[in-house]
Image (cartoon, rainbow, N blue to C red; front, side):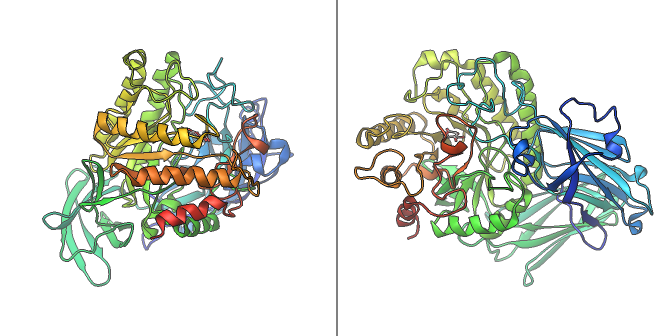
Length: 590
Ligand code: GCB
C-alpha cells in the first residue's frame, strides 16, 4: 500500500492537489458539525502547502484545521480498487469521504493510504475532507510543549524541542489511485555485485493466492527476465545481470524493473549497488566513498515544508555546484519525488525519521515515543527501501541526554553513560529494528555534542553533530580547531568506525562582513568551514563532512534566531551563496 502510485496500462492515478477549501477548527467542533460534508466561511489553501506561510494570521496556528475538495472519480475506474493517498500530513491527518470518516494517520512526513472502493459515488462529485492537527505534545515525535524543557532557554515560541518551525498541513500531494482486485502490494529489490551482479526481487500480492507472473529488468540494451510463481501471494526471483553497469554517486545508472502478476503490473527504477563499512571507510560497490554535503530542510518562503519541484531541481544544481555528493534528510523523511531525483542524480542519502531532539530524561513519555519511532522506522523503510540513493537509515537526531549542558565536550565518562542507560536502550531498540527490516543498509544515530558516547556503540557509522567554534569556544577558532581534532581522534580510538560530521556550522547574516572575522560574519563562517575541512582531510577515518545547513531556514522565534531564521546556511533561504560556498568548492570540486 505504500508503493508510490503510478499510472500504467492497468493502474490509474489522479492527483487531486490544488486549491482546497480550508477552515481552522480551534474549538474542535468540525466533526460534530459535519464539516466533512463541506465548509462554510472557508478560505483558499494550496495543497501541498503549509498553512502557516500562506496567511500571516495562521503563522502561529498549531491546532486542528479542515481541508475540503469535491472530485469526480472517473467512472472507467469502476471494478478496480480505489485508494486515497496523502504524501504527508503534519502531524495527524484524518480522511473523510462524503461525510464518513475513513481513517487517521499519526506522524508527519510519511505517506498513508486508505481504501475507498465501496464508498465512492460514481457519476457525481464526492466530497473529500481531510482534517489535520499539529498540536505540539511531549509524547509526540518530535515533541513539543515539554514542561520545564532543558532547551527552553533557546526556544521561545512556539515551544518545540527542536530548531525548525513546526510547519503544519498537507505537505505532499493527495492522490486517488486504482489497482486491480488482486494487486501487487509490495516489491523489494536487493542487489549484490559479487561474484556477479544480481537483483533479487521479492513481490507480495494483497491476497494469499497462487498466481503466475514475471519480472523484467532492462536498460534498452540488456534485458533480463524471470518467471514469478506466487505461492500464498508471495514470489521471489533472482536476476543475474551480465556486464552490469553499477549505480554510484558518479554514475547513477538506473535500470527499469517491471513486475507483473495476477493481472497487475508495477514498474520502478533499480540501481545495482552495495553499501558497507570496512575499517575507517564507507564502501560503495567495494570502494571507499566519502559522504560530503549537507544537513538540509524542506523549507522555502511561501511553500514552507511543501513539495516544491522547481526548488528540488534548483537545490540539486546548487549542491552539485559546491561538489556535494551526499546529504541527510534532517530531520524527517523528504518527499518521495525528491528520493527519485536522488536516484537519478547520484546523491547518497542518510534517511532520517522525525525523531529530533527527543528528551531521553523524560522517561514517562518514552514508551509512547518509542512506539511512534518504531512506526516511523517501518514506514520510512517500506517507503524508501528500493532507492539506491538511500545508503543509511538514521533513527535519531541528537537524542537529548539527562544532565545535558550546552557547550560541554563529548563525554566518555562512565557516570554520564551509566546515568543515560534508558536512553541507550531506546536507541539500541530503534537501531535493531531498522537492521531487522533492512539488513542491506547501514544504520546510525546522530549524536549531540556533550552527550554520552556509548549511545553510538551500535551505529555502523559514528555520526556526530559538533559545534566547535560556535556553541563551544565561539569566536576562538584556534582553540576550537584543537578541540575538534582531539575529539575526532578520541572517538576513532574508541570505536574504530568511520566518522561523519553530520553537522557543524556557524550562523552567518548574509552581507555581514568584518575584519577581524567575528562571529556572524561571512568571513567567520568561511574560516570556520575551512578549518573543519582541513582537520577532516587529515584523517582517513572521517568518511564525510555535512555542513549545517545547506540553506538558511525558518526556526522558532528566539534570542538565538535573528528574524526567526537559523542562519547557518551556506546559501540564504532564497538560495544565494555566502562566501563559505566558495570554500566548499575548493575542497569538493576537484
Ligand atoms: C543541532 C540540531 C539542528 C539545529 C542546529 C543549530 O544540533 O541538530 O537541528 O538547527 O543544531 O543550528 O543549532
